[in-house]
Length: 528
Image (tube, rainbow, N blue to C red; front, side):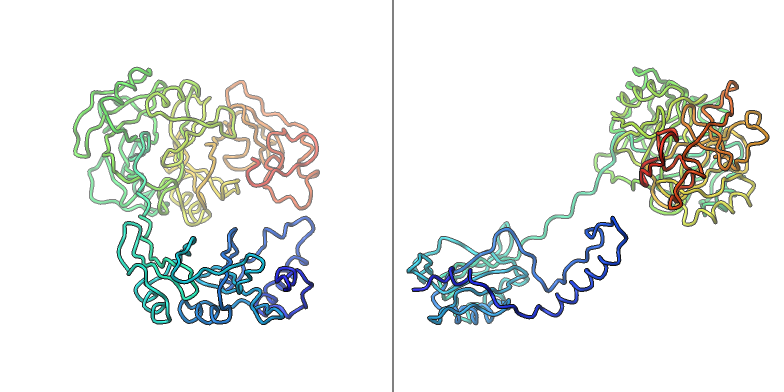
């Protein structure tokens, strides 16, 4: 007797490929040949057609008493489709055949007891059960039984789903099942330290309301002359006049972004604030729940408010244009600030890309912290649909704005509102959710030389040790104290030395942290 597996190892005659597969392969090869040198084909791959079943690590290979009849029966009872032509041995038995069932591949052959390949005997039990998920257990079972299957277990509801068990005419045991849908993932709940409310503290609320309505499209329900709430903002957003602040914040004269952080126990949070070196008023019940106003060791105002254990969490980068996408906490002493917020909210920090820059992990909205500032404040970054349009609105409304600039996290501009204080926080306008925001400030004009050709607020940006190029004159600035010196440096990677293909707005964006010395090295979109 010829061993069927020996025959299967014989050379195969070439056959025409499936037309759909051939067309897909041809298209991929044409794309590959047109790619620039060095581009990986894996980055341009196209998924195979859904009609071609996925191959898995394990494929069932059944032995049956009558291969031809089995192929017909599985097609009739289970809707199986043939995959190619079966291999017929010289003695007429099926040596190999493949079918597709439920999107998976299955193989079968006739029994070859002379080489140990035997088929199960109907009515004598089965050592293997084939599990098939179907859309309608009752209909699939009825169809199989009508075709000649033996019913072992009628369709019934079980903790794992509705199922039935049957044996086909060739002795193989099948379980047909409609699994219970997986439960929807539980809504993520608010975490300690998440920001649930913010408000811009401004000298004139009415003026601010008009400005931000024009720039960000904010609308407001009726409010009093000293405060406004923004309709539908995430997180909740208000405008508050500096003259109307609560007693613990009395005396605050600087515009800032006030924020209220969620906690599960306000009284315990107040004790942590005081123990860590901050100030906190006694907790009180308010129309919005239990809360307490606080000051961190740098004097930055914030509050804590109590939330329920099942309160859903907000989006990471806001939900719509006008929402806060990112917060930068500008602090005086970075080490002290990190220790304080870690003690109060349990924040854990990862290093950022700027000196003394840090990001607390898993805080909503996305938040960063940067030390080395003369006073503590919070800088918001807002979502907009179109940065260029928003910049035009800022300028038309009496504010200032840099020209839109491409950053690793998207297009953005730095702005001040129409109330003109040079120490105002600078709401940043961007295309897409950011990864970093460094809160640039302008170098005082007295320090910038008249010959400096840089333009806009980011020309010679304030970085306290964070180096930044200043536009076309390629000067470098290290800080903004009165001792600062605006000095030109030799920049080998400046315009003249940059490759023609470099699309970065500044040479430094390509040569991140190399201080622009040595050859041009493009570190990619996150290199900065």
